[in-house]
Image (cartoon, rainbow, N blue to C red; front, side):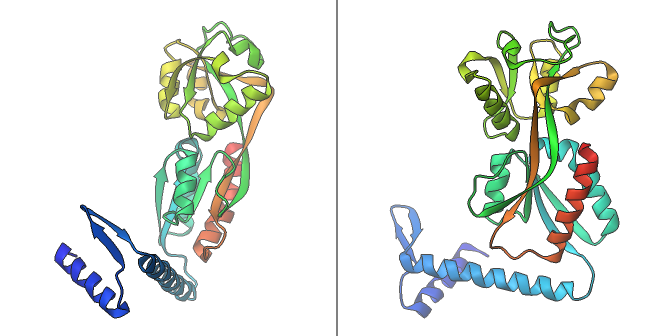
Length: 274
């Protein structure tokens, strides 16, 4: 719609309710208390309309339509492609749309209802979301083969303190679990020789392959590099194992499509990560 058309619609709505819905002034616009109330009901009306369309469509017996999925970087790049491909093969009329970001961003988008479901690397802190563990994933120390620690069969946290550390960024599920692991081992973040914070496993692997330090990543992210002899992955002692989780809104209507994908993804992710 053009701006004049939007302005006209707002004016009509305010005349209908006989009250102002927006505060205007100093180049800014915001909702009045009445505007907040109208917005709340409008969102509920639109939600019911969408639910009605979904339920009627599901009466045909076919799974079809958009499926808005969010996934953290590790899951999206290394675990989810096979799941999405097989799901599309089983349900060709479904249009999956994938958003990739760190765990914190994904859970926020699900809580805002802009994504149907999220797959993250850490339990959600959002009180409006259900967190459902779907599979386990082990984080290991990633090194170049000529690194001083590369011949170890296992590595204790204190052995890592003197060495340069390439870490995931804040907000990443991998970073959250790694920080917690070090704290439980009595190692503060300031004790670590962190030389870089990077936003993706691929970038971290590229930096570590130059020999500048170690990283802690999911073991599934380095399978190819291990086969090629470019990197080694060594288990921590004690092991660092986390649960990967599905998150979805508590109160939001879940379609048969979303329910079917949840069950499909849980079964397939256990196979892929095993």
